[in-house]
Image (cartoon, rainbow, N blue to C red; front, side):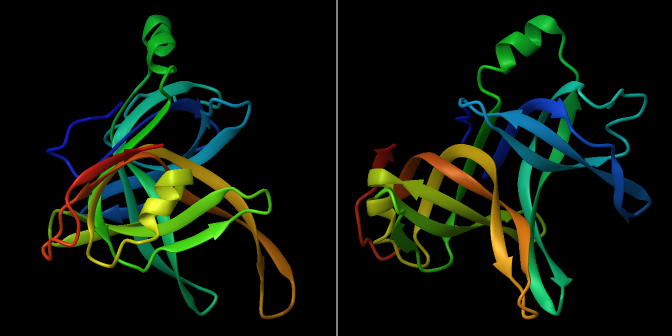
Amino acid sequence: MIDKTRETNMVKLVGKVASEKTFSHEIYGEGFYTVYLEVPRLSASVDMLPVTISERLIVNMDLSLGKYVIIEGQLRSYNRYIDNNNRLILTIFAKDIFIPDEEELKEAIRKPNEIFLDGYICKKPIYRTTPFGREITDILIAVNRAYNKSDYIPCIAWGRNARFCQNMIVGDHIKIWGRVQSREYQKKLPSGKVETRVAYEVSISKLEYIENDNNRLEACEVEG
């Protein structure tokens, strides 16, 4: 499990290339591409996750469909104006990518989806239960990065972590470990039509509460 705490946002994914790369944007002459990665879960299902990759990382690299790759980077967010609304868009920003050999893949695939975030609650947590009685709390975490920017990452806590998180307040400092997941949902449009969309979020497996400035609660650790 990712345990380096000097960084505030770290992701490691192992999966198969599931789409052709498409041009995303250019910054200071450096082109960036988007490719979708099929990342296995412990169950039979998979997560389809968008990855943003610099053209400089993939020079002469074979990213053909079905190719296994290992990606290390960060989960980043940005706002995009779509249908007269601002929408939060998430992507894994690749800092390194390589194609493993058979032995490397065999070892890496044991933990194909890991993320560590160190950030602050920036929206009142929402506690709810599923029709099957499972407890869930939705939280939004602001994670600082260079150049005075922040990424806003939606996260989901389960079970006793959900009960713990429901009492947090805006500004609380937490560290979380988990995985990045994709989830389809139905969105009703103003026209009355229903559109299927995909949300990306972090499913929390472990969290640590860091004592805040107001000393509201002593630091503690909760594992799911």
